[in-house]
Length: 136
Image (cartoon, rainbow, N blue to C red; front, top):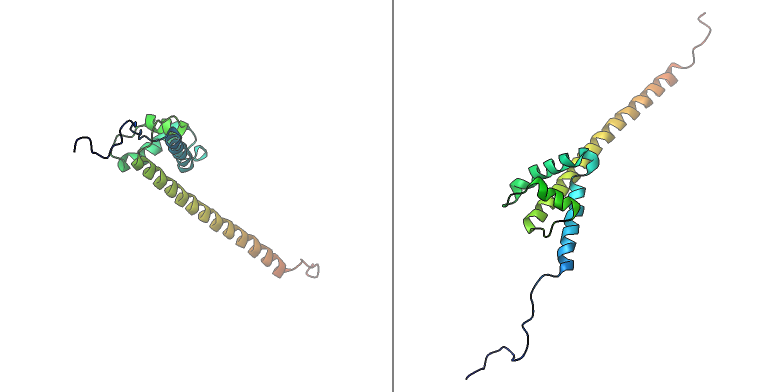
């Protein structure tokens, strides 16, 4: 039968595209994840942050990842974020958390040793007692 298809006559086709808000949310999430994964306080300056980011992300993505791309993600000016880039950023954030955990555990161990040394020193002084004047 002529004209008997599922499409309604007189209706406009609906546009299928990602909303700008969703795209911007991904960019902001990537920016936050990037800054958490490579904190500026740890690396000193932005060039070091971008260098480390490129070293970490490049082997994990199929397209070329440059320092310029890292800067655009850091500043939140990237137009889009690929899923493999986001996966690499999340992996970097996990790795940063592991590094911080190891450093904190090492710092706590050294503080425990210091406290134990202070307590041992105080205990030795306590056992030795006050110096008497009998021996003079």
